[in-house]
Image (cartoon, rainbow, N blue to C red; front, side):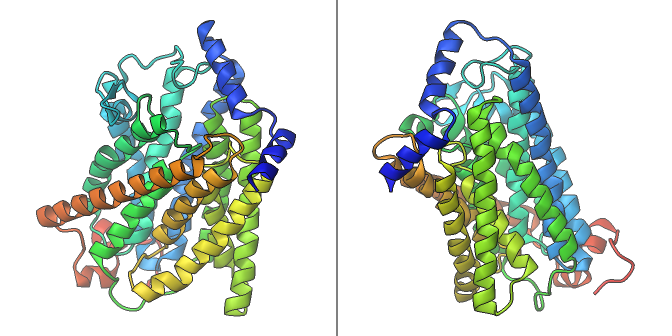
Length: 427
């Protein structure tokens, strides 16, 4: 299989990653120069990635009960505001600043000091450093927002705000530095993560599992999604924005960006199709919810591999994500009984783990033992995120309480947390 994919890579990929890295090094030696096309693409991609968080809000919001719709929208938009301020103050510096012990960045770039219009050749030699910072900010925003799917309908808004700030600082920034920061130990180990399989999805997915286990089950019987049209709208926005997420991670308007664009689309389409077929076979009907869930699983799984695999590899990654995540959501969650409300762990955690490991199987460049490197990097990220998230949740619970009262939960978070309603009639 590996030999087949390497041959396919020579045929399909416009340029190999190795060739591009060599070209970037040579370019850096000659002096950094801003490329208007690369800059325009990166800024456009940053906008696309930001759009994903409102898309996530509608995707998640459509899947909860009417009485909790606004709470989901509020949490997602608050994440956009809180993480932006955190990133500006010190988050970016911790994630990408000068390395301390291969574990974290220092505070030299706090308040974006020294992060200006000139390129930083260590990260992106043809775009302004501040554009690279802005692009990475959008990843930092959506990652804690993904966790909302696990504790939807039962977490205090005040606790959510504190958790988001602490988690972005103590979990997201370190993991981003390990994998993407200059000097980070997983980067030094050779781990491949094109656009955030470990940094975003494994990281958020394990935190989601921690949330589901610590907060416990929702009060009463779980209801059907109150608005599948909203969920479909959100899924479409996510699919659209994901092109910026993955293709934008090439950090240039080049062949790797084009390849990531195509592999992202193929994996997503295959996953949505396969999940529908699994639904059809197991539940006797293909469901809309199943199709959009499968598509999101495909988006998740292709993320770490998008620029490293051929379209053929993307097809297999998408297929695998549908089968593995379908089993996780349909059988594993039921067997163990945890209430991962919107399957944040079942899709993002499990799909992210599959995608990160599959990168080592299907990548056309990388070390001879790339699969083992990917397994180690994934395990380290998963363990750290889960343990750190448990500690953060426990500390917040002791200090201020995590969960709303049973009465507040029955009334709904829209009214009890925000004194607003999305609709005139509630169920």
